[in-house]
Image (cartoon, rainbow, N blue to C red; front, side, top):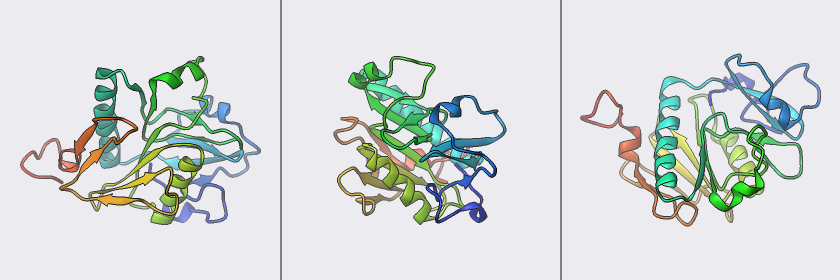
Length: 212
């Protein structure tokens, strides 16, 4: 999700995004009623924030990884995968985030009976695809926000450097490891058995002879 570097606000509750000027206190439910104006909106501690739409590469990586997760989770009846418009409402403070892709376990679906409402908990897995303008500090703040809300695994995809930071719920100080192009994603105990080579993820669909 692209955010102009000038819009980062270190003292805002969401340093990865721009606070919407002139907007009063916001609710997570409000995210489902906002106009389709090219921005992705989130609510963090009652503050409405926005990010510009993703570029071609980030959008492609998000849908490709989300598609792999959806196919695997459906085949093995593990749970629900959502794309870049799925709103997750966190417990406690009025906060709702919209990951580029996410997964939650099948048994949790009974906690979200209303398909017209935000999903009322943090996902078990959140995927964020960083834009070229997003800083490591900004993405770190967002990863920690997921983990504090109960997300068990966060994958932060860095398209330009072709690596993925892996965050765990029991280690919020930083990613537990960084995966390089020759490594594979591992669903661990969150999506058991899921693997995906980074070389396949980052390969350009029209240039099959090599990774981007």
